[in-house]
Image (cartoon, helix red, strand yellow):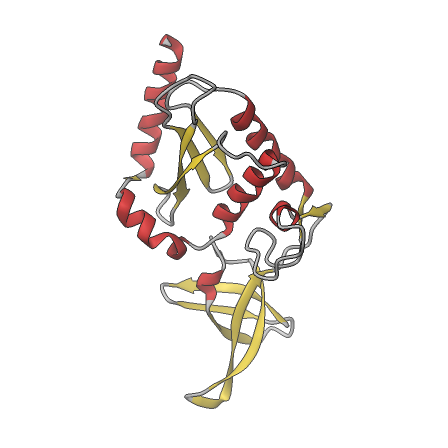
Length: 218
């Protein structure tokens, strides 16, 4: 596969430069969540059907030089390497520091009951406690919001953090959150329509202030 560094993002037109400084059009870029200028992207160099003299890069994944890699929790939960895994882009490896953060959050969600509306931020996600009860014997539910391009947050999922009966519940919860974080928002179109729950950046800041007062008085 070829690599290009993203140099411009203008709506549906994305361009990058290869190691020789040649500018190349990038297609299928929506496969990569939160793509930004400066990202290094891997993909297949293909001829343009409309102009055989031109080439374009069909993006496959973001290239990340891992400082300290560990096995991908999603692939581990499936026992075998999953070539279509979005958590690790099919490499089977993720950054240890990032994995540790997700695992610590999954442990907290799994093992400790939180007060209503308690929220947690990690990468491009915000998880909000929407449980109806603080009884540890009942399901604890969290709404999952993804940051969008304008800095707001859109609800894309609702998860039960203590309902699984698998042998590795914390590992699987870590894998689920990492997978949700890495998928393009377009994968959640039906959920976004169903929840119809979006916070602008200002509304999210206002929510945090209201929660701080709520937590202090709880």
